[in-house]
Length: 129
Figure 1: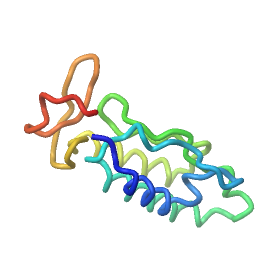
Figure 2: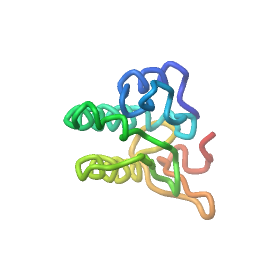
Figure 3: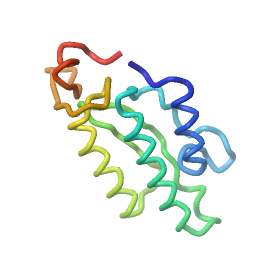
Figure 4: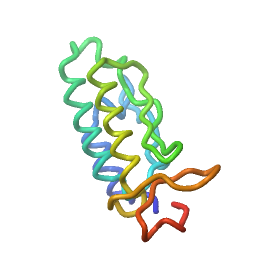
């Protein structure tokens, strides 16, 4: 199940630098992730936003998310530029996403052949939509 409009707006509000370009436009969509990862994506957004505040203001505009999506059953965050700390935050989120059900947020594991997704036992036979 896709995230709700309210969830997407909450994440966007938590990442004013991360999720917007220097001119204030949204830098990427959030419609390629699922509701089960809402809390994970919100946490990663807040953590990266905190790191971005450590960068000199005149350089922050270079750092924004280019794409956030599900790939191979994991949460992928692609940035315009990375710092080592941002890279570590994204790597930790990927690791957590591999053991978190995309549909409900409960513990899960990677499943599927071809189309790989992460699901708990309850959602193991359902492809996320």
